[in-house]
Each structure stands twice: as C-alpha cells, then as structure tokens.
Image (cartoon, rainbow, N blue to C red; front, side, top):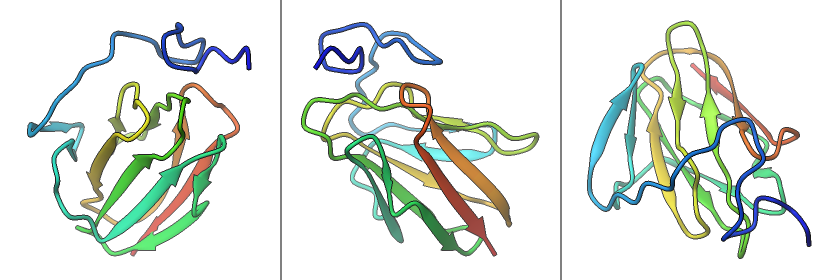
Length: 125
C-alpha cells in the first residue's frame, strides 16, 4: 500500500507531529481525561480497517471508552472538537490504547485526523 498512514512514513492527515510515547501518565485536555495506562474503561472501541468498531456507542456521563488501534500497520489519530469538550489522542501506533472519559451528556462525533471517513458517534446520557 502507498498509504501515508503506515508506520515509518509521514502522516498526510489533518494533524501531524512527532509520536509521543507515554506509559502511565494521565493528562486533561479541554475537560476530557485521557490516559495511556492500563486504566479500565467501561467500553472498548477499536480502530481497524480504517473504521471505528462499533461505529456508534451509548454511555452515561462519567463513563470511559478505550480507543484501541488494532490495525497491524496503520497509524490512527482520534480526536473530538467541541465548544466545551475536546480531546486529541495524537498519532496512535498499532497496539496503543487511549482511555477517554466523557464528563457530561451530549452527542459527540469522534474523527480520525488521518482517515477522514472514520467516524464514531457517541451518545452520552
């Protein structure tokens, strides 16, 4: 494949930058708690074959989802931009996991900065 999202190549997507490897750090970005540690999440969403699976998920305010890159060679970059709730995983290498906690109710769409057709609908009650 000649895709720019393979490992070792520059990402040609919406956002680019160096890969940041974290092991047990937790940080907060615009109201979303992100963690790259072994934190347990109520729900798991995979990124494989240029798609989120499942493509839609419902949770309660305060619950978390683990966004996992299950692609063998593709890099992904999940993000959500909203007026009062945002997060950005940065480039996710295969096998990486990011846990995101949704603190409030609402309808959200998570996108991939590298694969623009990837969308995950999140309904938080």
